[in-house]
Amino acid sequence: MNITKQILKNFSLLLLAVVASSCVTSKEIIYFQDEAVNKNNDLVMHADLVYKPNDLIFISIGGDAEAVAPFNLPAVSYSVSSVSANADLKMPTYIIDKNGLIEYPVLGSIKLGGLSREDATSFLKNKISAYVKDPVINIRLINFTVTVLGEVRNPGTFTVEDERISLTEALGLAGDLTIYGKRENVFLIRERDGKKVFTKFDLTKISTVTSPNYYLEQNDVLVIEPNSAKVRSASYNQNNGVIISAIGTLATIIAIFLVK
Image (cartoon, rainbow, N blue to C red; front, side, top):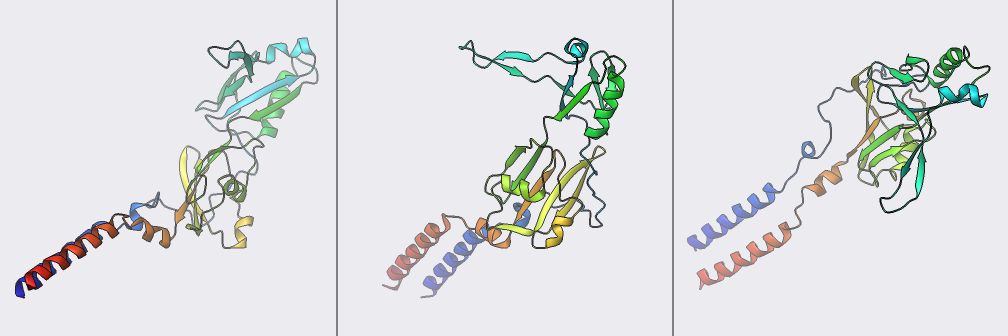
């Protein structure tokens, strides 16, 4: 009997070891846990969208066709298939470099980084008016994207066509939070003046919609933390039930034979 008890004790310890080895803590599955979060609302959105390094912008100048021609890059034609003669037109774009500059026809290097669309439009109109009478300036940001990660139905990076998107609209693009998303702890990562800054939203409070950061900026990242139920479910190994059942059955068989 003592031998039987010892064997059962050993199996119990083995069983506990199997369960313990499958445990997962929140620190193992939550993103960006060690970053300082701005708690005093100093992470404030610019009053208007401003152009940043690596922004891709489309610029077209309207007016007298002959006069504005030197200021408009030609549309680029490219084949959409290696086995097809079909072609498409690609909008001519400019990329803002790390110093906020673009190379523009006739004008050379001009700085648009740090300007809003209104300011950039006014700036270009003033420059081009020296060559063209009453030019019409159209500027559009092509690569305004936001990224949503974590406990949402469709995580990913989304392109925003109208250059303005709210927190709730971004979550809507990602299919909304899953039932496991921690609604009081939505994490925002933003780049400001070449540095990453961080803040959080509490979706359970109506004050979120009046936050100065409610409207997102290009390249913002939202991370939705899993709640405790999700963390607990992540610690469950689907094989545990089979393993535990097998160990229990084996222990029972051995105990029966030893008793006999």
